[in-house]
Image 1: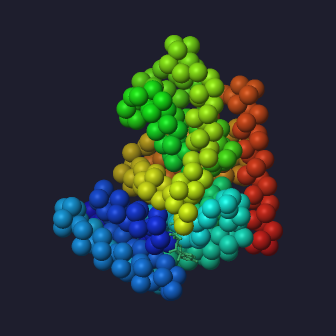
Image 2 (image 1 turned 180 degrees about the vertical axis):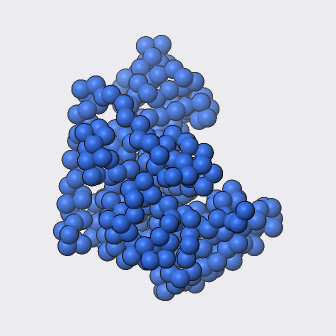
Amino acid sequence: MARKKIALIGAGQIGGTLALLAGQKELGDIVLFDIPAAEGTAKGKALDIAQLSPVEGFDARYSGSSDYKDIEGADVVIVTAGVPRKPGMTRDDLVGINAKVIDSVGKGIKQHAPNAFVIVITNPLDAMVGLMQEVTGFAPEKVVGMAGVLDSARFRLFLAEEFNVSVEDVTAFVLGGHGDTMVPLLRYSTVGGISLHDLVDMGWTTKERLEAIVQRTRDGGAEIVAHLKTGSAFYAPAASAIAMAESYLRDKKRVIPCAAKLNGEYGVKGLYIGVPVVIGSKGVERIVEVEFNAEEKAMFDKSVAAVQSLIDATNKIVGR
Ligand code: APR
């Protein structure tokens, strides 16, 4: 079987980590792409990681490029092109710059990798992934955004620390927009299969402590930006996108939260928003739709409204 090809658009902090993780998992051969001014970064990282592969013992070919021809026929394209958040900047501040980037990257992908499964990481995520799907014209199930895996990973970590248990045994169910308007469903989030509501009743934690953990999760990106000062998170975002790419390439059919285009599910039509989906070889094969209670519904609606306003701002900028 021919090896798969993975194109990484943006060879920055996340791009480099994606390249390393994709190789370690032997997902395929990897092309790191960046603008001409950063072609050296793409080539340098590609060569450096290729030289790591004999030590780590994995087979993957690496190359760096600023020519879209080199992503020809890619099976998966992961997009981090754009600028990351600086301290004090919200994700929304990024709209102006990153919408233009996504517009040009989308055209390159459409022309050179028309059959790819596209995973968008560039923020503000929910707006950028929608723009990518419009620009490429790809089927909605072939264009997804990485947000929920990361938000739920952050939530899982903080919960595992709260309960002093393994992160492996904590599951988290999150929906909605990325970060600030994330909607955690506590009754579907569990420790060893026991819901968080039950854990409160069992005296393992309190409602107030859970609320603080939810808030820390929502602010998870900003907390890291405040530490790093010169950029935003990159290890966990990269690992999250790789989990999505792996589920697609290996037809694992994992149930993971992603920004997917809704077509009436959750009462939303034509908007990308974070929901649990099944990812397999056809891309987004199923959207998992659960019933909300009144409180959850209110949070979700607020999240949808926030995403809609971001999209309106994006459309203004790209003149749609
Ligand atoms: N085409 C290709 N690459 C581009 C383009 C473009 N039009 N414009 C910018 N880039 C490249 C930059 O040259 C840089 O190498 O995208 C890369 C972004 O890398 P970093 O600045 O290191 O940012 P990173 O931390 O990887 O985050 C990228 O992901 O989480 C989001 O908010 C984050 O939007 C940001 C993105």
